[in-house]
Length: 148
Image 1 (cartoon, rainbow, N blue to C red):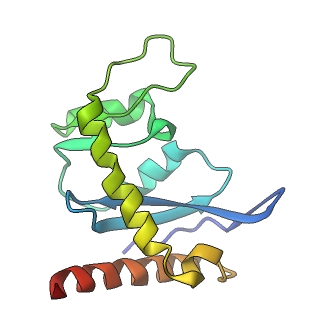
Image 2: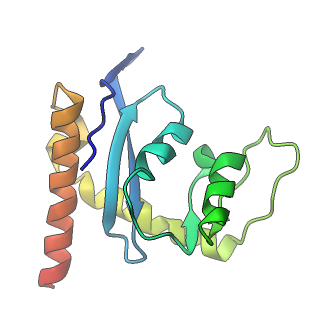
Image 3: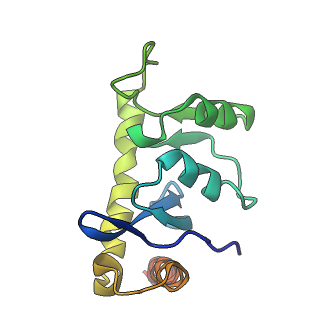
């Protein structure tokens, strides 16, 4: 398991982090990484793709992940990327709105994870301990899904 070496970063509001998450089609977490709050989502994509996960058939992400590198990486693995274009993109690519609506599975997964108060309020002082708790909450979601 590769751990994130980035510290929890300081911004105007205090310490901030971003959780980058890959889920399966059922909305269960497959891989989670964290980065500093000011770090671009592009770097989060590279953190997530380090481990050998199955190549996605459809990669659904929000505008933060809109880059040619990400689109080319997903296409090289035989998948389709469904990412809305940023406002500053000169030639926006059309997206399938019906498929993009399935991104709510990821948002629901974040919502379930944030039911853990420690994760939602970021009590941990180090990035390693915060990532460990994110992974613990993800494992709890898997156990809960297997028991129902």
